Length: 212
Length: 376
Image: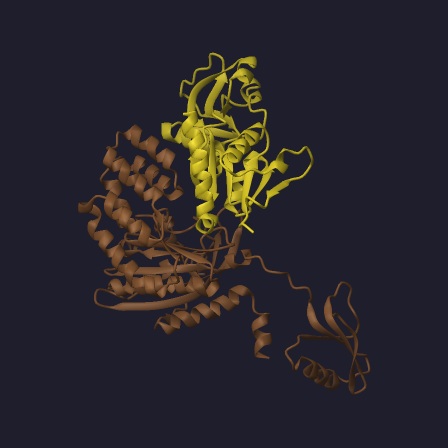
């Protein structure tokens, strides 16, 4: 029997897209497409075991060794700084981390800037690089509400199309960094399953090069 | 009885005994130290620590003290070795720190070996050999990754970068992050030769026989040649003593260059998600602490052994011996001795307790013990 490779995929559309890439790379698992409530899907013949996890938890599963490899957004990697290898930019789930504020907002720099965000570490690092004094307000969701209700001056959040911002009379002030999905690997697992993980990297990078 | 004593030990305790014996065999002497150290030592060398959280308290004389978060700093501080001298010590100490990703302090058993003084190439080889043997003591499925801060520094120096970009690239090497390294090279206008050398450090890892020729071919001779010669001599010396496939060259092992300068290494065991052993040459730390000598050593984090999946014990005790109120203590003690003579663990008690799990249930009746129940 082949040595099992555990792969953590992010639940949702991005995860489905990424699974299709793994399948094309030679690591199929047909049972994952069945509609049921199973959490783990195995293909013993190929030696892979997939599981869906909350996107923000993928890095934890990989860092702690429950998964050998996984796919996580660059935002999560920068925010939580897990001790993992970042092997490939998959070029999917592309968006950006941006600063947004109410339309027409101007930061005159005269007082501490109030920043609402889910990504405190990224926000702090961004403003530290600018030497700007900020007050971070950590929120867990509906970040766009904060500047509308006066809770914060700006928000630091992920922007895909910008539709939500527009509908709430907010606009992007500046882009902090581009975001996309990354293939990550557990550092210890990589030592003992390097050949198979390299196969995955090769199979996926052929696709990302084609896309580029 | 001896077997019983060994089975009663936890995995980390058994490992400590085996590692102490290993270090002693190579002439390392045990080093015992106080649990506390002046906090000032850690403030001055904060980046040397795995975590910058330290438990502090004020001593009776008003000095701010710390519960040790690390052992190497104390050994270096107290070392008397200077040029010409050589100290070889080992320790097993509890340290107190927040583990990576954790949110609270933990007591962690750390075992390690340090060689301080005038260290020659044999000294380096010996410490590396001890590191490999330490891993082998814990599991046959291990990998010792070897890297060289001097080679990393030589390649990065050649790129002519700002400190910030250099730190970014170093992080990329540590994460095997080739795509971001390429972006930084493009952004900073790094030459194609410089970018190729950097890519080589990220993509070349594994068995020395495969990796070394690639490094020889792709890294600049003038800055890396002598360092590669040293790496090759050390790998050649180690190869016969380490099982095939267990010693790797991997530049993703990176330690803080303010403290570590030459060989650095990390040990992994299959089933444990992070490195269980970490070490390297810390001549730069010695200099920072005003010592005119070199230093090389490593630590093994034995708390991680808990991560190895082991079957849970099915029983609390091998045998329960029931006795009555009227049974004299001498008779109970004698019955316990008889039952435990073949290495069984025996617990004597008056009545059965809820949820107690045992293999055998015995009752003391007069002079005799009678078996009431036994699991197949």
